[in-house]
Image 1: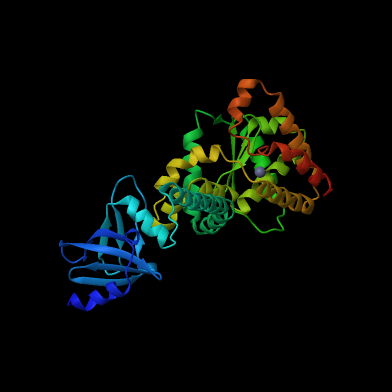
Image 2: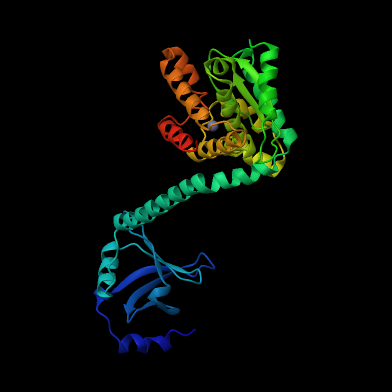
Length: 358
Ligand SMILES: [Zn+2]
């Protein structure tokens, strides 16, 4: 490339010193430095050196942000770049070319706005995934968990709580068998649901009942004693059977244990889930929707057996007042295991709905 060919260009278009600027050019291929003069005209950047003339559209030039006294860099698409040390002259050149540079602060500010927008979007996405995505995945996953695995979770749970939170039932075997027999003899128009009733005495938990993932329904002596009529106990059991039928416990467990979910789903490894199960199950708080569905399931089942759904409402009232009247220590302990009355604010609503089904 001959330099003489370019000389006329410069002489034909004389520029004022303020509009040109000395810089160092690197071609991006070698470490060779070339002293060049920069000029901006008609949206193009001219880079001229002794053996070089490049004319590059400004749109293809990436200019580094102002950062203290560090040289400004003008990057070109082919890997070459210019280094400018004279900040004042660079500013004059930019201004003369009509380029209004953003300060680093404003660049940071606009980045900050993007970062904030991205963060808000991410939070919304996570919340949406948590409220809608996770329950859906958990429901699908719950269907895939084999019954034998779910039963192991029940056994594991009972092993973990027995002796500590729960003791063997003090109800006579005859009483237990009579209750179980009566419940099992109820006609279930909603289809048979595999389940197993177990009785436990638990001062710590008080009057309560809950369904475990594998279909085990646990009922405390305290609940049996609290009931004024056996139909009230059957009503509670029918409600729990509703939870078993829809695998609420397992779904809740999977939802509460995303890691366990991933392990179960992808790796077929249930050890993580098993280890976390007792704690997660004790902290179970069913959603209002789960409670409504279990109530509705119970109401259908009770009605089909000529038992009024209001029996469940009666029991809900008794459970609520029994837990409210309990001494403070007991309440604190039982607060973590309040399956049946887990949705306090909704209890009145649930009672009204059940009474409406009489
Ligand atoms: Zn429930």
